[in-house]
Image (cartoon, rainbow over all chains, first blue to last red; front, side, top):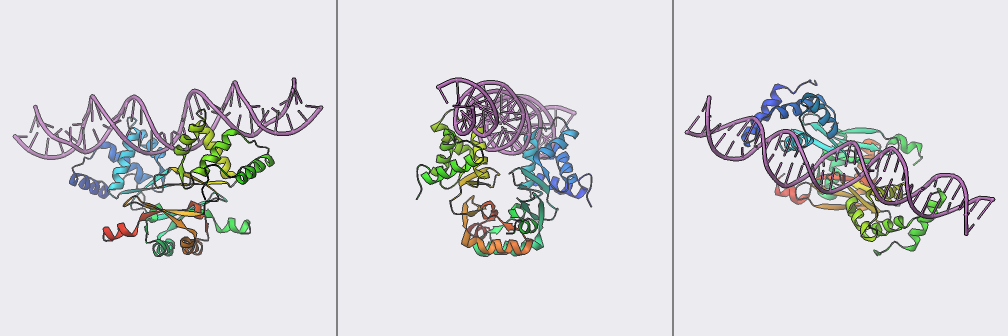
Length: 151
Length: 151
DNA sequence: CAGTCTATCGCAACATGTTGCAATAAGCAT
DNA sequence: ATGCTTATTGCAACATGTTGCGATAGACTG
């Protein structure tokens, strides 16, 4: 279930991971992780900064982005790019998924791992690439729009 | 073969298309189309601006981006987003292709229509989406990096 | 050719990220 | 507790796009 605050387990895992790498645990990082945990689905960088500043007005964009990079490096967060290239972040633990953007109706749908499996397989056999589902963004026309356009 | 300047046919098609919509043909647009034609493969927005400014130092980013949007609206240019979300443009007429970005070695490879066919087919059957190959950006690990990491 | 309409341009300000650097402060050792 | 080392922060500047607005200048009309 979604929590308003990062669970104890997550914070502790994080502290341990940081300590092991000679890095430090700070109040700001706690806030950023909490905000990410509370924004369970997807949040853009700008949204995250705004929410972090509600709790700590002294926080700056550079700190937030650097922390997000750090969390990605630890495998605790991920980001992908929307159709406009803007960044969207979410905590690891959210099910890994890709994104489908319809240029006809503007809808955005998620592509879960089960549905994506045959796609990833096709990518690997055609190219040798092991694709990251979290970074997979497909642009095109959804079934409804294709039907509407008689394509 | 790549031309240093947009072919006559393209410029004329463009003028006709613009006239039909009550829009205008200007020197700047000629320059931008020429630059795009000369940058046959892919060029980022910043690169295009720089090259346009070589020919017309008075050109501004807003003009270049607005012209690129216009060309996309006319179906004469396309853009996609690289792994960092930066924009990359190319002229329509370049063979339609997708992009593969390796997060291991940073390599970027093109995905031609033939190789992509089974992938697009998998996407359609899994999701109903008709994917745009030109907008397909796959992030992951290339075969070599997967081997190197023993994955 | 002069006049009109309005698309386009250049500018300036803004939005979103990124980076270098000096000041701060976290975590360890004494 | 005090001091040391250096990771982290905040700031300021920059990079890449985007947007609003007044000024410019295409293209058509008479």
